[in-house]
Length: 475
Image 1 (cartoon, rainbow, N blue to C red):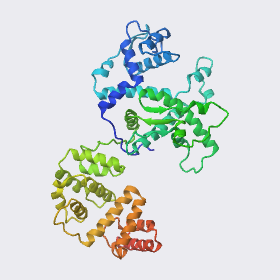
Image 2 (image 1 turned 30 degrees about the horizontal axis):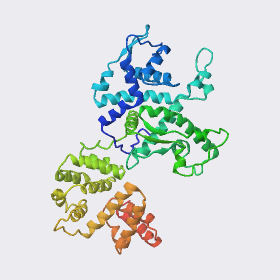
Image 3 (image 1 turned 180 degrees about the horizontal axis):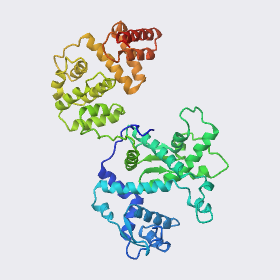
């Protein structure tokens, strides 16, 4: 994706709900507890970490036990320092005090809490891009510096790999009708950043790269789950028990789950969107357009998937009376530019959500060449009386406009193919008449009908009509 890419809209939970999720995430809640625990007797080393002899007490404060307790306490302390929940007051003496931001956790706004959580997330993501610490220790060269070449580790490449994986997980999540509900198999997620899109059957070398990526991601998602970014079902360790034996390909859904399943949480969706915005991407959220004009709504929802466009439009309509909204929408739907047919389709879809109190607005445009057709459709569907029959030229104009909008919205879809077949079947002499329609999209629509219609004779008629239309328009 380039920096100018527009992503599908995210459907975010309310910030108050997300802030509650952030506060209950183990990484941030542990950091907050240690910040409140810190006092005059707390000592840190030169790097700001808790001195080793205090780690058992910190672990006990967090209710941690076992072999990893000290390590988890150390991580929680580092997050507390990184987020400003604790401040080092005397670097030489190594003393600390609770930071001012601790108060934000209980007395701040949801945005304050989410800001702290985002800072913690960045720290955890940085950790996730670092190889196992045991490998780092083994690779220490003389002089105490890490020899990165001996690790075969490129920090920038590793961070970029994780960003790519999370970007694809974001796309899969916002692309769902119900974002965040679906878990993604780890092999599919790894393959999405390893296997070239134009590759048919992956080579053994590529499959090996996917397998290696899965193992890296397994470690990384285990680290990212406690910050609340994802829900993760790890790779079944039995699959990795025999290092010499390649695990068999999964055969069903239960088997697939053994290879790891990951789901972006609502909080994770919020966090990744914030990072994408920071990186310069256009990452819209449903509701962004609710206070904008009708022109922004129709243009903005043009590339949205149907469910997201519907949700955005409902929010927009909620702040307006049906009659005022209908008049705004109809005014914004006019135009002869290439985006106009799709604007009118979005307008028609929006008007389907308003009640009969909008009827006067539709009657006002009955004689409008661009809007009269859709106005008649709306009035008829809403049971209005005395709806005038449309002139033939309006019927054909609306037909061209509708197909142009469908082409812009979906491309050469099966639904459009069915629409094209139905049009050619319903109107005898359709192509003899339709090429004369004075609509900017007439030649392109007829060419598309020629491509899409399965009957060679009909397709040829469509192409001939397209040629006549283009000649008529002087192009």
